[in-house]
Amino acid sequence: AEAQAAFGNGEVYLERFIRQARHIEVQILGDGERVVHCFERECSLQRRRQKVWEEAPSAAISEATRAALCESALRLARAVAYRGAGTLEY
Image (tube, rainbow, N blue to C red; front, side, top):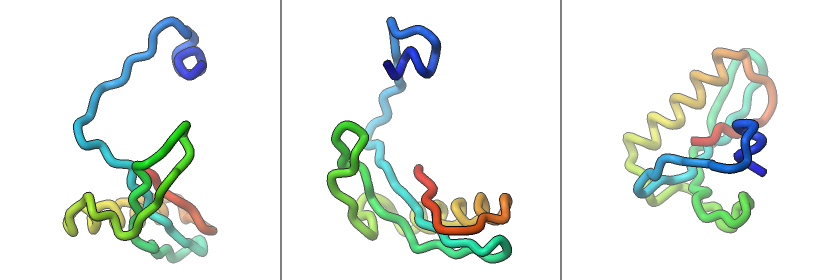
C-alpha cells in the first residue's frame, strides 16, 4: 500500500539502509512573528508508525547535533511565520 501510494506501483518498494538512524522531533511554538523551541525528543522506538516511547532529551545525539536540530527548526518556522504549536521531525 505504501509503495502504491508513493510511486503508483505496489510491486517494489526500496529504501536506503541508514545505520543507527534516529527519529528526533523538535517541538516549536510560534505567534507569527516570534518562535521558540521546546528542545528535542527521541521518538525512534515505534511500532506500526505509532510511538511506543518518547524520551527527552535524546541520549543518542550530541550537544552539537541537538543545537543544530533546534536551530534548524527555528529557521524553518521563522521562514513561514509559523503560528501555533508544531513539531518538526528529523
